[in-house]
Image 1 (cartoon, rainbow, N blue to C red):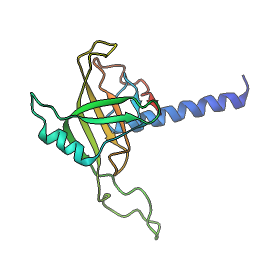
Image 2: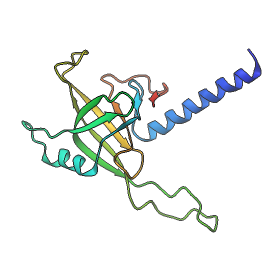
Image 3: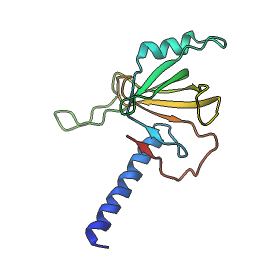
Image 4: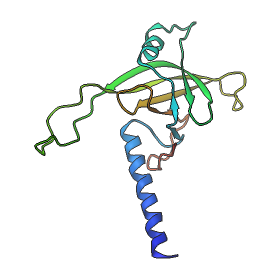
Length: 158
């Protein structure tokens, strides 16, 4: 094996570890892949699902995969705002104190399975973390049914 190949493998491993650490900071965990090529959320839909759902009449939001066009419905059950610290130096070279004005959002909910679900599961918990201020750019993950190895890498599927 050449030294260049070792460096590439090391770089890929380091990148996977960095990305895995970033996912952990957002609340994701090993055991199920984190998906990123999805769209379709709006703040208004999240609010309607969270505040207008009832036991007998859940109000889902719909997300869609930009690659496969698969569509999933999710009933939002909780929302938490995260205000990130400024991480870019200002014009004078100093990072100003404080946080960004708009939050990122961490959401949890349920993914009801349809009668066509090949896994035969009736319902799965799901978590969503918006990548930025826009709800249409987010990561999501099925919450693992059983905890996995806490030190394992978190797989991110783009």
